[in-house]
Length: 275
Image (cartoon, rainbow, N blue to C red; front, top):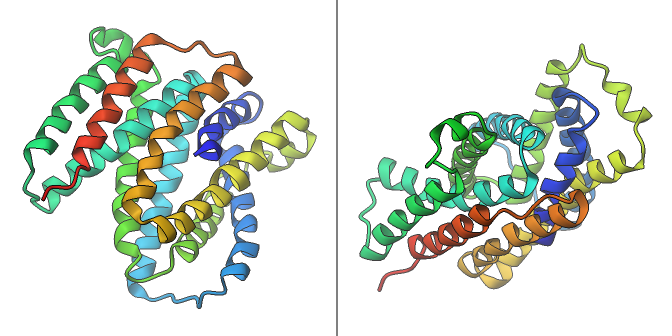
């Protein structure tokens, strides 16, 4: 959770000097390389079939879309605010999508959670001033949350067909190839003229904040169970806000704290198991 939280600050630093297509390509490229020793360590047989490829291709497209929206949101907004909005809204949107497409019957606690989620979202997104909302980066963050809800659904169903580590690796491979062709006309070699802050942020985002953090999460899920492991996600906004405050000197806004807290309570009730 610490590694994931710090990733938003790292992304903010990366938006300062180079264009979006260059940053996104190198992020996926280094992420792909960092998965190789992890795949070797796990020694799981690689199984690719039509079913797994369907999920991999869909998630690759959504991961690229997520990075584009996240880059634009963080570039013009606050890293701390983006982390809170995306982290708290994604599980709420995931639940809504499941309820709609799979016609799930909701419990009283889940209805209560959805109402709290709407209240938290109203505060987080500053919907009391709709003009401010339309002219802020919150639209990009909201789009990120929706995209990540789709990624979550695909990831959950993909585990029937492919190991999570291989799934993440092949998503990264495809995303690297696609973004390479998209960024081909840009100056991709410009990254090698950047200073140490850029490279620390890039390696952190691609290796520590993505590959290593995701692997730890998968291992923890196997040891503790998915429900208990997922509860640790509530710590991501705290670490993201803290790192943005310490490193970027971003202000900690009251509406982000208050709205984020309400939204996290909403996620708790939405995921609450009924007897």
